[in-house]
Image 1 (cartoon, one colour):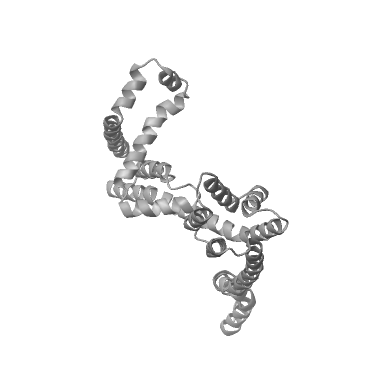
Image 2 (cartoon, rainbow, N blue to C red):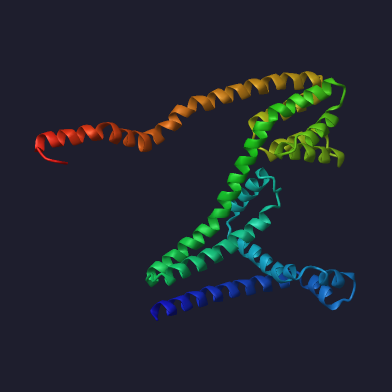
Length: 309
């Protein structure tokens, strides 16, 4: 009976907090977008018809998702928003990619602070333990999306670093064959799909929209944290400024990238013995010692005790 009451109380508190937060978010959103909402509801024009043609799930869950996003923005500090924006940029989500992440953070807090304590309350945990697990679940739901997007950004930067030597080789061959730099970049972005191809395609789009080659290359450096790509972009900027042949710059950097790749492979190979040391000490050596020394220990004990072990 006490467990049932505890479950009901936790569910009631969590539900009340959730509905209250959603109500506050809805009120704030209504004040910010009252003219637009009234135009959609009261008019019979194309906007009203377009709203009715949206899927039912989107019309039902869309306001809730917006409320979660506003809640996440309201409880996230400014310095963390800046860091999330940087991680979203490195992960390929763009500077505005944190909007969905903020909604996920708020939903994670609500889910972690509700489901985890309910599970422990169902197992018969005490009230203090349930409250503690609610705090831990909410904290985990708030910080896990940050860890996920940071890891995604690191993985994307590693993929860019891995594909860079082949990309520069292909660009050098294309330029030596008579293509311009933009044509070589377009060829590479089509032939080598992936994060680096996406960044090069975005560079071409910026140039087509009116940005100079220097500005596009500078933005490419700002969107990534790969030192080799930053050096390559800086070399192209300097070559464009002083008028050096692009083919020579590409050929030189292609040789340097091949050298850097060999050095990185040697560095990874040199780190392997150190990484293998801890699994050997923790898992392999104890089992090996038991297999090798175990029978000798049994024989010694039998010899000194005169009986069976």
